[in-house]
Image (cartoon, rainbow, N blue to C red):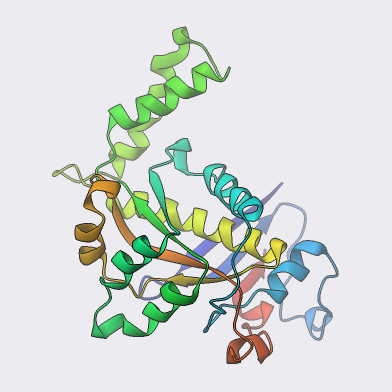
Length: 256
């Protein structure tokens, strides 16, 4: 059995350290056999190697409805802690909706407004900052309806909510935990985009408070702190022409 431990720097968004623990052997990644290793020739790796964050979109190109449906379903199928699914995905597609979103940008994040204007779609990835037992009960009821357990096992299934309670403060807030689930969906979506050869730009450079005001009815108590632009990069997008760059494997991965 192999276990992958993921560590992150609390001062940065990016996961910056991976540790794999296996019961068979101990290997150091700075061993010579890891150096100069060629990229793995596998479709998954090719997808991820080709994916780049777009810095400029071609407003004349739209993502097909067929591909958008694939993206929507991938978001819905995303894994989450205790299968909580504490999210809501709001798709900005119409010009009217784009105008509402554009109006939320301030001087601190004005650069990202062009992506909203020129991108095909924008997905607001929102989380429930006060996820309750009642919210989880809806998940359990859906599981039972879909054949995962039965009514007699409902209370046992609900006992998993104790984990969510361990992430909840005295005021009932567990937003740090539910927000983390949204990033799983974001990562899932980015790989799907790469597979479909569609460009994407994750944006934390948004004004969460103003988005909450502009889309109060749609959010209905949820909070949006990250968005994803999807579309096709402009021919002048400089990032599309640059080589892929990541830290060396031995800097982020250790096998014990």
